[in-house]
Image: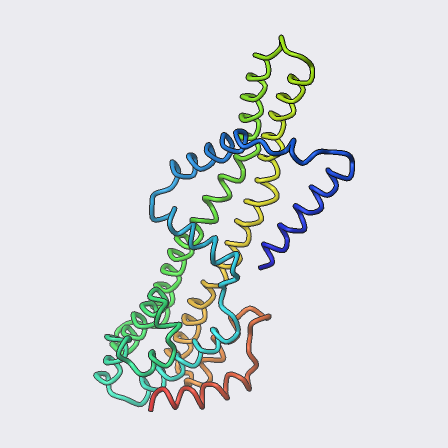
Length: 289
């Protein structure tokens, strides 16, 4: 929502100032300049990205615009799920725990948190490392190294849309110049016509330069930064799982282990110790029952 509000302010001030100094809005309506500029940028985007990244870029844009990053309730739900799962690991047999991690869709612990269950990457991350813990042959530092490698891989994949849009954004000013040059070439073919016609053609070509610069620094650049912020916040969930499970592996009680995870939550979304305790002791026991 902030992205939409920011664009409204930007366009309003820019166009308002242009009109205030005597400019005519209809002069800026140059669909063929926009076609040249937008089509070239879209083509470059398609060339430099495989189809999965193109599709994920669409998802990333919607997540950023709609502020789909995890909120405090999402982090609290994740801590509650981990607390319930660790209690099962601590108090139940290996076979009983495996029933939860082998088929999380049928597990009452995971069913109590449908939003986490719907996140396949996060669910698999939890189940994979819970399975390694109950097997008992891997040491904590080995699990930590493996988690770090997987989180690094996830980060690389999740930030591909950010890198792709940043690349296109960086090229937009140059593409605006290309659109302007094509417009000037067209204008040169009208030198035998009156100044009014020639001036209109030159003005239209300059709209391409203006559009390329504004699209780069006023739209795509900020959008790419917003995608990075949103996706980075999503990846904090994996760091939370890592720190919580590692604390449990090193001997911490479930209630203490979730405190290790709580500390990895960004300050704005971080629940208090009392909120975590209230949610885990109530919600965790209920889910495990």
